[in-house]
Length: 134
Image 1 (cartoon, rainbow, N blue to C red):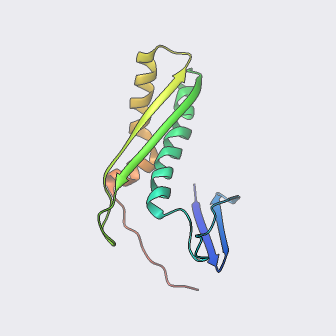
Image 2 (image 1 turned 135 degrees about the vertical axis):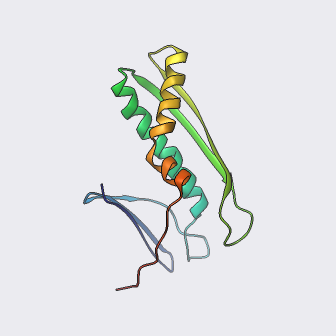
């Protein structure tokens, strides 16, 4: 699965485009009030990525376990100390409602934590490469 994100920003213009296997979606994230940049910062979007991944994966894994999930709430957070330094103290919590006993929902949460791709990507660490502009 090939996934990409693109930001195009200029004075009073901020466009965000997401793509998975050729399927393109645009999301509305306003620009900064100064006119340049995004009103959302990278850390917020990183933690949104964790929360979104877990949310989507919980439904996928629930279906495999024949559990109907009716509500998912995921809150991801972390800290950044100074410019240029990596984040730390990254964690998340989950509230889940569904048609299974709480023990089964807890089992589903624990299982999903092990297979969530974004979580596993951050846990193992990956290289990030700057490609030359075309």
